[in-house]
Amino acid sequence: MSSSTVKTSEANYSSHETLSQKTPLLGDRDMDHSHREFLALAQHVASSTTDQLAPAMQSLFEHTREHFTDEEQRMQSVNHRMLSEHRADHQRILGDMERLCQRAQKGRGAMARAWVSDNLLDWFANHTRTMDRALAADLSPRDASRKTD
Image 1 (cartoon, rainbow, N blue to C red):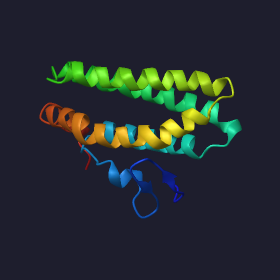
Image 2: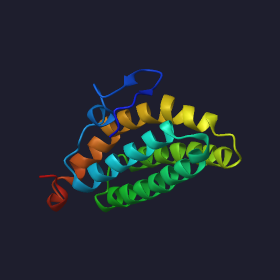
Image 3: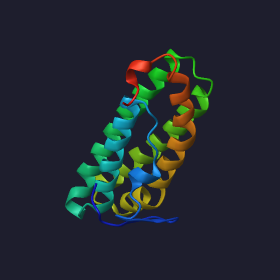
Image 4: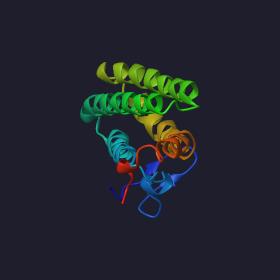
């Protein structure tokens, strides 16, 4: 991760407190890997130039859509008790992200960059600490092969 600073409404993330430190590892290899990729892509959007913004935002959107689809399949496989709430949270973020991708593709990306920096990163840290942690606990006894060493 870069040591550059990403400003958000609630915090300044710098080399002293990186987003990966704020977003806990869950002990599930696949989820932890996907989360690291998400953070790298989000930080790329937040620091991208105007010319890089639309493709960076599209990459983040595609990764996030795939990440959420995989996660929801895993929720279904263990009959996760919070599936509907978790899926609704995913759908809300994907809807926002898709609208902002469209704006960025039309050359109006300032709002997309601000949303990633000011909202998405804090949402992700909270989502991981709450909803994803509950999912990891449900997956743990049934899928020990995916545990992080």
